[in-house]
Image 1: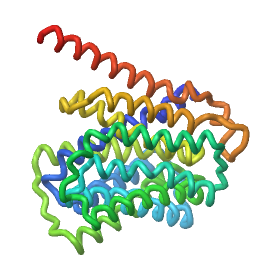
Image 2 (image 1 turned 90 degrees about the vertical axis):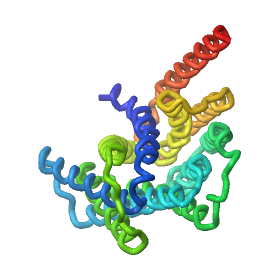
Image 3 (image 1 turned 180 degrees about the vertical axis):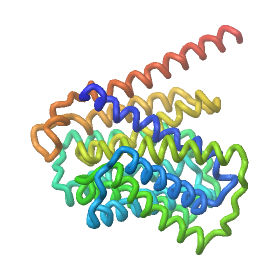
Image 4 (image 1 turned 60 degrees about the vertical axis):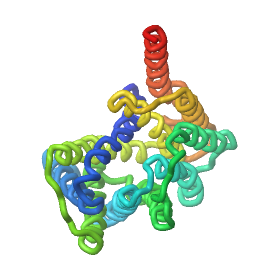
Length: 331
């Protein structure tokens, strides 16, 4: 079981990074609140069926309310705001840079509300990780265009606060119950926010086609079920500042996936940013003697924790090197 848990962080980052695939295909065919409302309702139904299928413990009224509140913040506010900003023209790279503030904000909130004390090297790791995100996204920030308005900027900042507050709420108030039941109630909360947003601010027009169906299936099964459940496991078992630092790796993994699947540019500067972000996460997740994390996580070595990411990025670097040599030889 311990060997399996070691790969949960890497699995989460890779799955979470694929979210851009669904968003890329869905945005032209449905308004953001309407699309997310449908997605969250389907996810809630799936988790409700799963609770019956595996006989999960029914959440108490208090547990259900806290999980619903976490879902309002994590799913409704976070995804709703960031999807709306991108739909209104905010460049995805610029939005991702703002969302990159989330680990730092979460670490501050975790210290205040969860009593998690970080050593200077952990704060340094968070700062280095943010620097890595900036380097990875730098090539995408050249032409921000007119999509960066006061409204889209505020929406992106609200999304960051929503995710940070939601994960803290989940850790403090809702991590003691059954994870499957809690996740179901999270999507109930997210659904309420998106349904209200769709009713009051959108036309609810949806063009059903293959791209939209693929995007919906991918985001529901891979993100809403797979990635979110892994996130809930990490929130339950680990320190929030360490869990949040994993989000620094998402832009890097997304860049690699986009290069593999869509032939998007991936240059040496971005690869350097990946290395910087990985080093920052290594610092931020380093074990320390004090704190309120579980004994199991405090014994975990940083090298083992980050090894899957290092292997992933080194493999990508080798592929880039081979591609460069092939192009040079043919030229």
